[in-house]
Image (cartoon, rainbow, N blue to C red):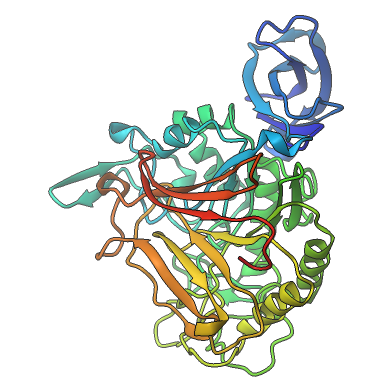
Length: 475
């Protein structure tokens, strides 16, 4: 959703023509009508219609009709939803929520605990949008009917496509369809727009371009991850309304979302253009985790931005050490590798970006991420860092939405992080039934311009609050 447009997504149960009607009220008196695409098997019966010419900062009510392709007078029951367009004036303020990691580690939709209940808690805040920081599905994570709990059993909704790892396009489509079986998620999607990025589990754990895997179980021997990524990206493009990718499986996931004068969201893709996972200790690394083209785009768009706040939506953290997890290989998956000294490997690219932000005097940058399955707040400061040519900034971590929770990651001192808050279990793969599911909220005040971050538990209770002042380089 922008200040004057929106993308509305739907999936049919048979070939159909998509029609969207919009209104300023729930009565739908004198609605505007928009004709969307013909939905067929080539897109798994999904489609997106672009609405334009909408009023800024207003609540829009919409309903989607699916019409018989051969007789447009015959339609199904409408599906209803609503959203707010981005404001034209900063006085309106902005509120959004973020998190990531859905249906991971074999923990799926458990209706006995309310399914994906965290989405109901997020909806109660009536956010302008939801930023999903990646791992929207776990294509590599089969879901069985039951999983063991301490003193009990976790019972999953199951489907055929979720009974094994995803390999075919049909498998990947089935993974996205699985999450939409949850009522809380469907209600949330009908009320709250999504800004979506991806990470590794949309394809396979810790994947990188050029990787070849498989010994026959569970993946066929010689499986090329680039082939799986093409199928995953196509399914991703079919199941999410993304402006740069809708209808284009080869489209770009990284983009900037302008949400009025207060906020720009820079959505990164730290998966598609990265180099291979390695010990990450090389002294030169032009490709890094973003790739040169994406890095130059990010620098250019940050310099152009006139928004008060510039949220950098990263699908992986900066200073938290994330091992690759491949047995016998000391490789790393994110940016940090545990060496607290001067930047090495992928850190070199981040150092270049932080130096650029400082020297171009770019104000109001805040980093948001998920990935590590716990919640925390890190303040980065050159006075504590081995690399000193940057201004202080904050990074906030949230998630998972509904997946296994894990202990807190180790910190890498290269950029001087101070972890001022963390909540994480001491055991690995703690189930959603046992808690440790998190989301974050960002609230920007229209009068003062202050940005408040609240880290919340799955029931919405606040764990940590940090207020940031506008107009500062770094933060």
